[in-house]
Length: 389
Image 1: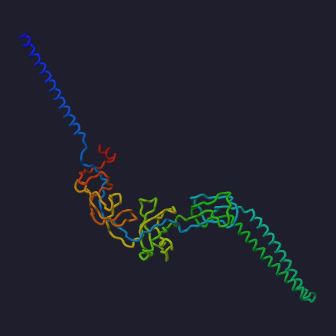
Image 2 (image 1 turned 120 degrees about the vertical axis):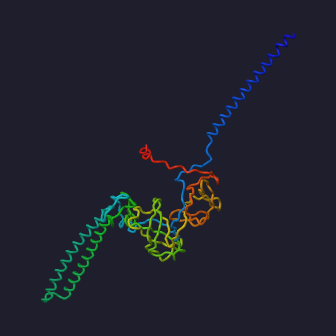
Image 3 (image 1 turned 180 degrees about the vertical axis):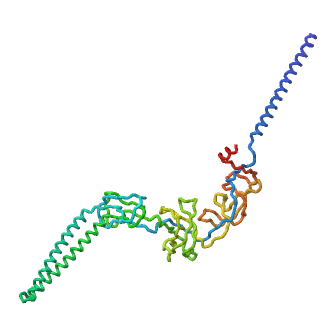
């Protein structure tokens, strides 16, 4: 029994030592894996500095700010004609479509002339009969007058012959008038272009019944476009012919148009209290499409101001901010806004920034003041890279 105890104790000690060794090895391996995972996480963690592309940065600069009256309206042709039916007839043919160019005198619409042609033939026949009757009455009057001079006819017969001659003359004039009227009606069955231009609005098709006064189509002269605008009557005293106007046209958002005031109405509209103003385009700049909406300012007072697009301004309630690039840090800077320039869509900045400051062009909502940033290097064009290689 004593020997058995001597040999059992060392075996138990060896087993416990092996377990402890295995546990220590497992702990060491776990620590190594944890350290490796921490290093990998640290390597994959994003940098705290915000990367900004050069095109996302805007430099504040002084610009010309026109503070005159706002003018809104549309582009309209000075020469335009609403061609309407002058007779009641069926439309036989429409020869031009919208957008087609026409020349003065070109046939545009043909109306049914059947009834008018019959009237013309009848009037011409009546005119010929009246002419024959007048010729006969004149010869009869001449014979009676000769006989009366020789004492072979009475004065009464001469007077009767003169009456018949005068009546025949009146009938001839009336018949000729009816013939002329019928011919005029015939010409009205053919609607022609009054000037060189373009068909802008076709109103009828073949088979339609055109009553007197019905609009058939419109013709405009694209080279006679002008800006027909409206200005508040409160600013009427600030407007006079010859003033410069800067404006934008819907459809030409990247183009600024310039013109001069030609005419200012002497009275305001009784309902809208606005005054109509006509603006001529600068030579060679007028668009060729009528009806486009336009908005701008009459330059009655121009000054230099700091202007920013609305996309660069962040509004929080009644307050406005911009994100300024100061060194390598983003700073949320409050600004004071002035009036909006309708011509450019920019806002006047009264305070908060100065000329030369760099701002984010379109700031996002996840920015924080004091955040670090880095400017990305411009990417070289593919052609330049190939040449460099």
